[in-house]
Image (cartoon, rainbow, N blue to C red; front, side, top):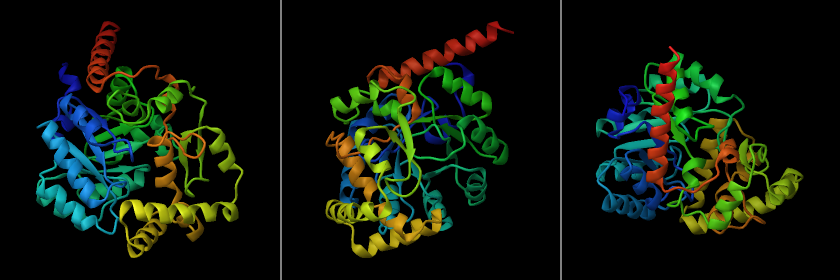
Length: 353
């Protein structure tokens, strides 16, 4: 591998290549994460859709499959966040990633135990805040990315953050091949993080029919909607999503309440914990209470689509990159291909000098 392609996050995370597989809810389980880690990249378990006991089993399953580094994505505002932090420390997990900014206390606890802390951010000011708190790196997601996303394109957000903080920046949103990796490095990033590209691999547990649906979509077939949980969320356009787009808060709230009950039963959460997380979400994202209630939709609607394969009653988070992906490689094949493409791109650039 070219020295250019061995970046600071390789040593920071104990990985061979500067590629991160993101912690996608209902998707990033032990099978996908262990395959990613085994191929030399950083796989991240998605814990938000797991109970504490399920997370412990998943961590141990990954460790039984590979001795390589991996990470776990946590919700900083979860009722049992403290217990999950201690689980990572006890099991010697290398990396803790966060969708919402972790507290200074959580950062210190993890770092004192040797765990690398990597929050995802969507604005320069958020990167500056967590950098001041001592995180080890940040994942910067531009508007092309799937799931909760912002309005600023990666090509504009990434250089802003690189210039603002003195720590490794990992680029996310729109990446799927080796050319994109080289482009991210040219902007000053230390690597790329990908979700949709890893969702569309053989080790991903998403139903095959759903994967084929992703592969049939174009770059124009995603939509950013706030009808799922009250905040912008990029998903594949389906008839069900189109129906959601024509609902209003009054008609959406009953479904959200039903889904809250369903997720409470599935996750083992307490009502006290759900209220606690709702308050934290309201404060962090400046939401109205009606939007917080709508957020109960997210886990169950994603589960219906990504686990049960129901296009008629579920949603499929997706980056715009789905429109340029046309195959289902193994994770090892994907990572090897990306690195080969990156090497070839660097060689081509060298020939232009």
